[in-house]
Length: 129
Image (cartoon, rainbow, N blue to C red; front, top):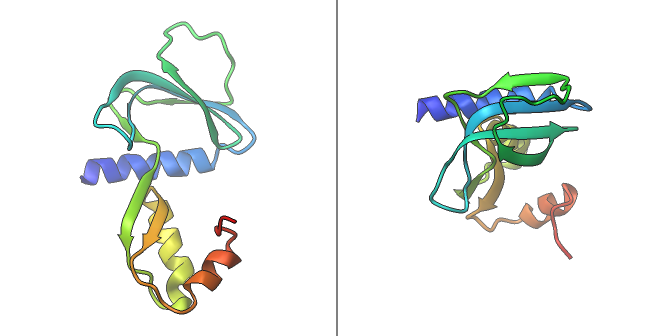
């Protein structure tokens, strides 16, 4: 588990530094969160901090990238969901969000219905209408 944490943190830190760049993570194993399967030898194309495509690894890629990351022997989880979160007091909420994001968690679902949660959701623009 510690190994996966290190990979997720590394990928987050690397991709957060890839703003306005064409980047690639080459030859990695992708583990999607919606099915029980992994995909070996994949290239992940990233532009402006967004995943553009996941494709089979190409040995002879002639595209010029601003940043190339060797993913050989590493795993990539594109997103993680914490579906059983307990939000803390209002003063700690930003720290709580940041701690989850740094650890690869991109979606949180609160299990406590407290006054102020709806206000917080509206404040960060997450309320779907």
